[in-house]
Amino acid sequence: MPVNWAIEAEWETLDGAPAEEKACFASVGICVNNHWLTEGHDYLANRLRTKPYLSAYHLAEWLAWNWWRLRWEPRSAASEWGQSHKLSSIGEGYIWPSITIFSDGERTALISEPTDERVGTPFRYISSYAAVMPSGQFQAGLDDFFRQVLNRLDAEGVKATNFHSIWNSLEEERSSSDLSMRRKLEALLGVDPDEGDAAFIERLVDDAGEVSLSAIEEIAANRGDRGLPLTVHDLKEVAQSRGFEVVAKNAVRLRDRSALQPSGNVAAWQIGAQAAQALRAQEGLAGRPIPDKMLAEMAGASEAILKTDQRGTVGFAYAIDDQRDKGHMVLRSRWSNSRRFELARLLGDRLMSSSENRLFPATKAHTYRQKMQRAFAAELLSPFREVEDVLKGDYSAENQSEVADYFDVSEMTIRTLLVNHHRIPRNELEEDFDIAAA
Image (cartoon, rainbow, N blue to C red):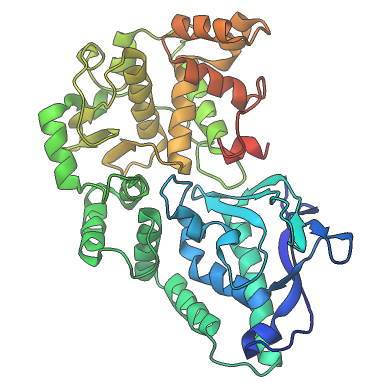
């Protein structure tokens, strides 16, 4: 569906403030598909307003400074994450909306929530809305707003502000492929521009030449609360000591990959599910459960990988090709159905990745690539049509447990399938923004 979004500013009068703030004081509204994320109750005027009085200057300054993280950093539980993704953190004496912005790399979410009613607070936001758009559209909307603020500052004769400096740096970074690569890695690592470990980022850049930049970006996005991600050298050492041999040339391949390209117009889970359906049809699997031996062979591994609880030590599953057609695979879980799911994710990642990849990580990150993997594994191991046939409209926990046992997957896998296909409600707004906005 086409997305129409904008940050609109209607200039107002403000006395007793710095020149840049005075010039850009405005009624500011954020609108997505005719939904005003900034709508609220103005208690002083006793009316609803879609555009509260705010500082367009401070908003532009915050958005430009956090641009790289807003554009590339996925949702995270890190304690400081909200400072770069929640408008309520802007401060500067204004009542900002409770809007959270984040991306999976291809799609960007804007989620608004009502603010609490507090005595003496003149404005309370009431919008509760989740919007998802292609990240390119999000970027274009921000640039329009930046130009609007720059034009206003120019018209008011306000020069050489902090926002001008941030904007000039941002333009330079975006125009340079080398700087863009480093800024993106910093954002995925959860740090602001020039605040990352420079030596480590250089090491990641070097590793990208060995296993592909896209794989290194996935490792960076998984930094979580484990500190800096491991290097390719570290991953190879763990794979050789704790992993299982895999023969990549023996792994199954999809004959038709034409519809599997990441796209901001399509939710990641839809592409992953489509790839799994195509593979099942190609291999003549119909709706049957996939036994361990067949699943392992499809991934180019032996059944032994699923018959042991030997685990890696890096917190996620991955496959890495030491040679062109051979390598190692490391699983994270000790539980049988979780190991099957991880193996299916790695199979899907190889199927859906470009041929330049030599590293296939299955992490906890909320990137587009990881969401494709999860959806692929769920659909491959427990195809939705068959799950639906078995459940026969009874989505009780007991029935979900039985169908999970039948397909040898976790109950969470079945629940996710049902949520994706709108058979049961999601538990919370930020569970998955593709689902939340559906």
